[in-house]
Length: 398
Image (cartoon, rainbow, N blue to C red; front, side, top):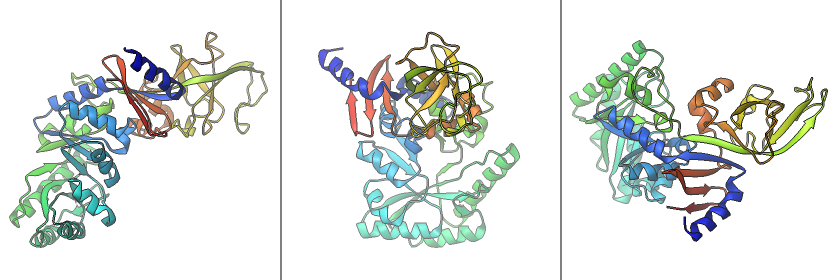
């Protein structure tokens, strides 16, 4: 490392050696290649919700370097952020796009989702005013009942009539989303999607790009991959459920970490933190950590529910998790010191274990991490990028 890089790293340490998220880009790209190896179809990388807490721009850049040319997000702002930072190729917005931002996303060459005939007409109007053509995928409600046009002959008629009026909308895709309730219901949803595809084809609306599988569908239903699969959680080490029998690695890509800011002795009978939910019945050694629910560590982990990893050993959360601080019991870790690194999620605390404690799923556990923790990106066993989104500072060491 040259002097300039040493100086940059030294300057970055005060920001990220408090509460930060370590992200392994090598594991991310390995998971992407694993997904590609499980299908002959196009792999669309879903990086919505700030790439499941990892930082969408830096993740997209790493995936783009690994060969990905198709991304998906939830909303227009997520798509525009990627374009602003030089992400090329396809970016599909899978949710609603407000009429007010249609001109911006159309000019950015972003692919949109229509969930109704009115959406198609609104997109045509906006694209016509610009003199541009917008690529659109039609979302079908196959029984998930969240977004999309109903799978019926009446709705197929309405879409076909609308398509006759479209001069600036290129209808390229038809897709849906599996509820993953059980195999019988998944099969029903897939059948509904394919029936809608047939009805549209019979009415002269020919759509080549059909997709329904996400990360779980990728491994569970290989016969339904069609033209593409949409892989999100699997990229970040959330191994698809019921795939343990399959011979592929899917390492976790993120470790949420903080430091011990203070260690103090507390006598039996004392209260730790807010309220009186945690009255100690023993003399304890309590460590205060520089993290709280404002960083993404959930309040539901209070009062002994959560655990953290310090020096390879587990310490129980004591009292109520605050917005900016929390306390843990290090009585059983006598060598713990102020300044020690603490694993909150990932590293010494596996995603699934953490999610079980919080009574949630792994996707939520990583996605709710806030923008306050600095993101520290590692590749080839070294730090390559430090991103502080609050100060809008980014240091690249490549």
